[in-house]
Image (cartoon, rainbow over all chains, first blue to last red; front, side):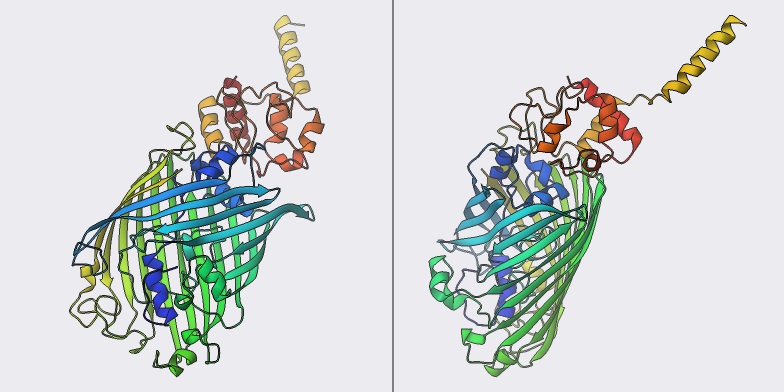
Length: 448
Length: 126
């Protein structure tokens, strides 16, 4: 979760900031490659990830437990170093007024087959700017192959700490583009709850079925653990969202895989009640997210790959709790988001990605208040941006140097903001324009 | 009877008895088919490297379920098959139907032409 010092209990607004400030990231974990004998490029559209192919999706749904039969240590590590420069001075930067080179994170993973049909993706991360260790994304799974009327079915169980981290597609939640960001990136003021608002602050369990390699259904519940537990895993309890009762999560999808290409369409639902100021005696906010998503991949011989995917989210908000404590002017509200990304990958080594992100919704002068850089003059969350990224992934293929240990991704991302927190000019009420947050991000991402 | 006519009739009869011969595949196209459908799980490198699927180096003529170091399904080991070209022709379009209980999670090579190309490519990997 966002480990920066937070000054507000407005989780719905904060979710957007956290999403950017501490974007979860996981590459093609080399321990999976060592376990399966597959190269990273078998499971990912480029040889680093995280974007999955149907082969990688099947590995995830089989609980990260498929192997050659020989035991390999289920451990990996990664590091991300980045340089971020924004058009105008970035007050979030350390030291320099703008332009900072920083190790964003150092991560260690329990990743692979634990025993039998049980496997793990569990990350512990050192937050470079925050100088703290903490639990990151965790997805402990079990899976079994069975049949219903001679139709193959993969039944799965996931225990995880972030709704969506267990999802097999890359369209919402922790696994959507962009897959990483600088710790100093300036995030917009709002994001749907399902896009990171509960990450690492909840524990939940879901059950799933993948029927005939086409139909995917999943459902489960999440709850807030005790303050003592949160503290023990590096999450500051007073900075964590608190669910009032259980949150409900459901997912359905349809996929067709023709070998050369594949597609999917799907929907996801998350409903949650959140206690304002973590006080269960107060009226709670009720949030419901509905996500509609789709994707298409042309894989061919893997020499030239095209990947297009996107998601639209509608969030119903009943903010009676936030209104009660004065953090929102209105109870009934909505928030919507749309993002799409299209990528072309050559030889699973050179990748170009074009991404569009948009968030819009009800205005609220209390919820989205003026504040230097991160606030809104208009009380509107409306933000639209476009990004262009180029990546070089020199390793991770069958014949790569150091396989399956050497893994590297070098990337350069340009981001332009058309509107930011409700306006294109003087959006924060302190003279900052949306284009002042335009950025150039260069990063080095390596995994072992 | 004219000798040429006898030879022609003999050849036609032989053809009718043996059925239409499969058109020879193209190993170059087969290499692409292998990259598209097989390479996620199988290798054909001469180091006999196993992945989630066993090495396919030298598969033509090999007895099923015999690559060292790979844990086959009981169904695979029980077949007693030898991977001849004809065996691959009957197996590749729908592996799960041809070998119920196989661990191979693959719907099959969609076209007969691609099956022939794939076999032609595998013939070169030995």
